[in-house]
Image (cartoon, rainbow, N blue to C red):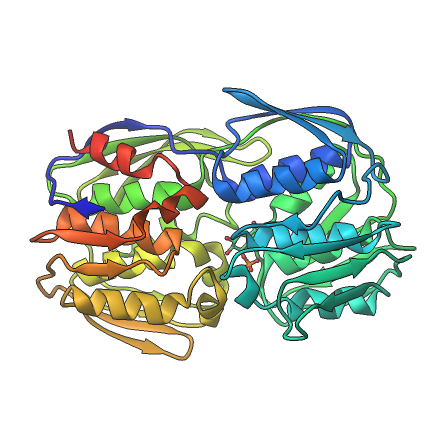
Amino acid sequence: MKIKKQTGLRGTLTVPGDKSISHRAVMFGALAKGTTRITHFLEGADCLSTISCFRKMGIEIERNQDQILVHGKGLHGLQAPSGILDVGNSGTTTRLISGILAGQNFSSEIDGDASIRTRPMKRIMAPLASMGADIISRNNNGCAPLIITGKPLHAVHYDSPVASAQVKSCVLLAGMYADGITSVTEPFLSRNHTEIMLNYFGAKVSSTGTSAAIYPEPVLEARDIVVPGDISSAAYFIAAGLLTPDSEILLKNVGINPTRAGILKVCRSMGADITLLNKNPEGEPTADLLIRTSSLKGTVIQGADIPTLIDEIPMIAVMAAFAQGTTIIQDAQELKVKESDRIAVMVDNLKRMGADIEGTDDGMIIHGGRPLHGAAIDSHLDHRVAMSFAVAGTICEGEMEIQDAQCVDISYPEFYKDLYLCGN
Ligand code: S3P
């Protein structure tokens, strides 16, 4: 994919549905009684992997143009899968489904692509084992393929060493099949979509500070779910709108749950002109975001803010390279175990563009403001890397070439079309 410089991005855009919420809507809909109707579902490859896994366990899921119908069979309605559960590239599918599978009365095997086979799974294997689950890594390397033999589970309190919504959700989902109240505490609060949506489906989940607890054996009832626009997808257009001269972009109906909206805080601290319109605080809060060209300055990003913007750091790193002054990102060691090692990959590719950036153990230091030029970018098949550099290509001088650019299908199949339309 070749990208050229653009000026004056203008227009109104509705970004695709939130990836985290789309996964959960299918999963919880499958475990609820009745038909769950999902609108603005993200038709990205990751969420389609979740659909295919639940179909393999006997759940009928209809897909049509503007909605997904999940014909749920209740908490104990899944059947032994008809084959290996293929999670593709999706860490969310792998870790959340493992929590559900641990408490079933059948065995299953989960596998995925080359990237998923390198993602750390000990972080869910350890808490699940403490609940009495039987979960093993086929190659004994703490990664997928995972073989899960369903067992009766015990309630535990788990102190998670990482702030991870996937770990938290895995334990809470297993807790639905346990013999008492299961709880998780994490060092910082990670996205809380599981807690919000399980309560909406009728479960009893309580949250205090960085802890969440769930009562076992909830009766989940089918619901209608309207998935908000994904702030992680909006991030590319926030950056493009802020950095491209003479731009004004309106992003409609974006999810602004505070556990996800750290990018807005960071952009403001960098001097961004972003206005929130039509705020809707119900359930998962949403707003329209009005983005206007701004001159950006460096900032410091750390601690409790990191989980609220973890997937946006590739885009933030690019913004920091175009901003004046130094940006320091720390406490973000989780970046190393995402779809690629996002510290190494961002540092390497930004250097190819002429940026002054250094990687650290838990983040990066970027001295912004150098003139940046197009380069051949290796996406490492990481959708967020590809999209971040596509945006960079619309701002810098010279031509940008993104290798394996179609990996954006994971979370945003129409990305290049939307980026092109904004500039025309
Ligand atoms: C997700 C949680 C985050 C995030 C991922 C989606 C989720 O991962 O990076 O893209 O839907 O729960 P971790 O929980 O591993 O931080």
